[in-house]
Image (cartoon, rainbow, N blue to C red; front, side, top):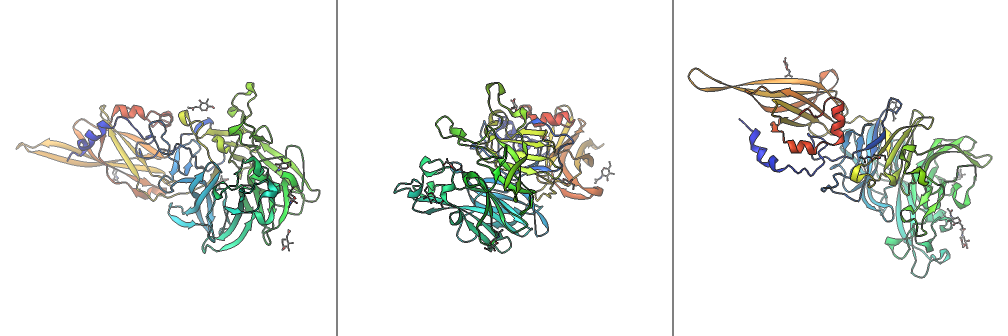
Length: 560
Ligand SMILES: *[C@@H]1O[C@H](CO)[C@@H](O)[C@H](O)[C@H]1NC(C)=O
Ligand SMILES: *[C@@H]1O[C@H](CO)[C@@H](O)[C@H](O)[C@H]1NC(C)=O
Ligand SMILES: *[C@@H]1O[C@H](CO)[C@@H](O)[C@H](O)[C@H]1NC(C)=O
Ligand SMILES: *[C@@H]1O[C@H](CO)[C@@H](O)[C@H](O)[C@H]1NC(C)=O
Ligand SMILES: *[C@@H]1O[C@H](CO)[C@@H](O)[C@H](O)[C@H]1NC(C)=O
Ligand SMILES: *[C@@H]1O[C@H](CO)[C@@H](O)[C@H](O)[C@H]1NC(C)=O
């Protein structure tokens, strides 16, 4: 049987390729194309990149083919797992974590209000087979926000909520109709039962006096309706210390708070207008994100916290007087807190790499991240910095030397992708999908085979098998078809592995499948059988993007 020709009519029409067919075996996937300006070498930490770049250009069209989703990528930008189809809507803060003794992934999933920087939705936990373990919504009658999610002791979850509420705001310059304010709340919730273990409300403990964005300026909501409530505080990170208290970052107060885990009172403030610490040189920060303990020492002089210091607000509308700038550019910072002397000193700052400087001769600042951002301390002493709204990531070694830098998009998308947080984590994933195979014959008498398995990290080699049909004429003039199964095993190369097999003229290759092989050549998965398609030159040209060029330089790319 010749299945080969039956679909050619359709394919011949498909010469205008709409999707970004980075991978021949998965033309339906359009992952981000990192523009890597400093490639990783052996100094980079091991592990994959966990990112969720987003753009206002949501659906692929003829100019933009990028699917907004959570992604696991390797250090070359090659895909490990596309979460497209696993998560819907706006997603962010994809991370690997541990829950009840098992490896999990989690991500925020919902809608994103870009004007206010709020997200409304829930958090979803997946296991290492990418199956849903838990969908976690806020306790009570509340809606989770996107900014924070952290699993504590493999048991509880910390996240926050922006709840509009009405108050008399005349003391803060509000008129009679400006009565809406955002109560920034956070909850710690038992993941298994959904029971709220602790809940905190900013309005119960922090006066709107501490806001860096006063109501009359209208920069954080004008307060006339629940939708435009004044976001005076804006929690964007919370972590629980081993002493049971919480470390909280409030972007719109430009302050880090320590919150008592028993009664919710403020234990101390760092930064802002009521700092309990005298700030040393370089410590002052503003509109910061992602505060974490680096070294806990709650009473002593050796506590160190890390944060991403944006130092800017409203730069997208600079020129109309709405920009607030604390420092000339954004940086990662490690700050030492001396609880005895009540001083805060800069341990080190993670500077933007010079490769990303737009134009120094014009005095342009290095990266100015007007929103979002994260700073992850890597186990090897290095740092992984995510420049939020500016759509860039940097890894630095322990000396602060940039050893990896990438933009999330290139060409048309170069300045249009943003990414809320980014991480490097180890991850072992088992795909719940079938391996995807694609086979294409060329006029030169060879067939190219491609295989991929979205999310799989354990396959070490692929065994392609195919049926070769040969016709022979018997002495009485009958045609007899002989079928021989052949196979070829090739080492796995990244997301998509490809190889070429020779096809003699008299032979028809009618069926191709691939088996994923793991340790000891155990079979981990088998694809369905596919027919060989005739290569369409125009289509292949369209596919000539950097990823395939990159594969070619590795020696297994386009061989036509
Ligand atoms: C906040 O500021 C107002 C007006 O300046 C003042 O009357 C009030 O005492 C302050 N409240 C707090 C809690 O600091
Ligand atoms: C601190 O006070 C100044 C002057 O009153 C004000 O402009 C600023 O927004 C306040 N808040 C912060 C967090 O700096
Ligand atoms: C936290 O609050 C509890 C209850 O009010 C109090 O006993 C404890 O001393 C507080 N801890 C700190 C570090 O302030
Ligand atoms: C990648 O980034 C560099 C550095 O900013 C830039 O010069 C180059 O044009 C970018 N490449 C693409 C394809 O966008
Ligand atoms: C990944 O695991 C290796 C081996 O345990 C470890 O050395 C490395 O620090 C881990 N990488 C990350 C990013 O955690
Ligand atoms: C692969 O082909 C070889 C002969 O080249 C054969 O000995 C072997 O059994 C085949 N393996 C499978 C799994 O079909």
